[in-house]
Image 1 (spheres, one colour):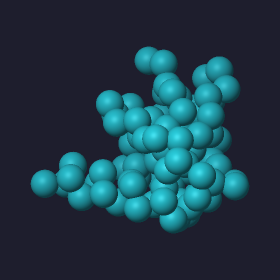
Image 2 (cartoon, helix red, strand yellow):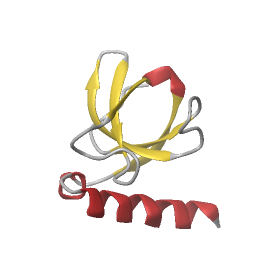
Image 3 (cartoon, helix red, strand yellow):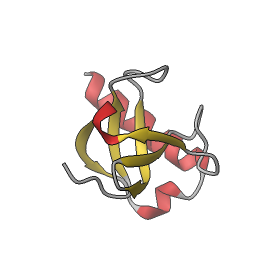
Image 4 (cartoon, one colour):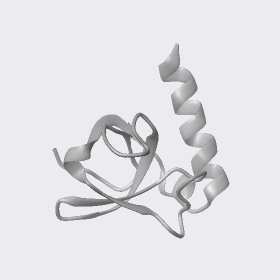
Length: 83
């Protein structure tokens, strides 16, 4: 699967297992991920692409600029998907 900037993914492994994160950058088999809460936009988590499950949701670039807007967007996504 090809990942794109702004795509939401669910972590399948590690301490952040089951958390929803946004892709900030793709570097070969590695992804740079943030959620605005535990992982800030300025200090994203580096994770192998095989350790995440992709979603079809892609956030607009404006939402990836600040931690608050990113965390709000992910919370809204999680609230809709939890139902």
